[in-house]
Length: 207
Image (cartoon, rainbow, N blue to C red; front, side, top):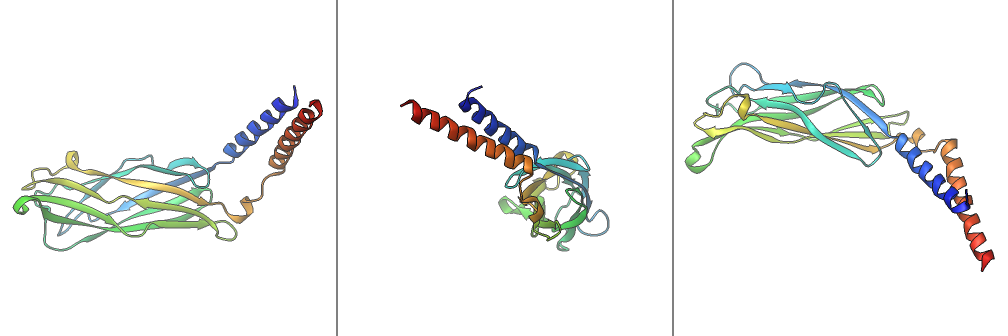
């Protein structure tokens, strides 16, 4: 195998090694919403696997449907203000820990002459989950706002006219102890540089 092919192989193995070092992020989730009493009563159902799991490298993100939300009420506008809703995440990988995204649900009149009604779910700040010995590893989870059961005179109540709240999972930073490449990665990188340098030397010698 000549030096150029050897260098290309080393670079390929280096890339494969980096891809193999993707971090698995696994978490369960629980939705706590206003499911009874006065005001706008809502129902939720898991949309994603629970727990969910994705392999991500630093800088990558994944957006997916997390849970469905709807109301069975014929009158979405109850005049009693908003109600809290929250999603608690329980991480098991890359480490154990918990965090919560908070928000509100409420009903609105909308449309021409306010004939239409809609339910709204609105979220506050995203969850920033830190981990690692120095708490500098960072995973962020944000949830999408949604409108559900939009219709005239409450005719579109029920799960068929509900909405899906999406989660965006971002892997923003490795913990500091994970920033140092493994010895095998150093070896592959050195092999790639040596092979490319040797190939350049042979080309100069042949001139």
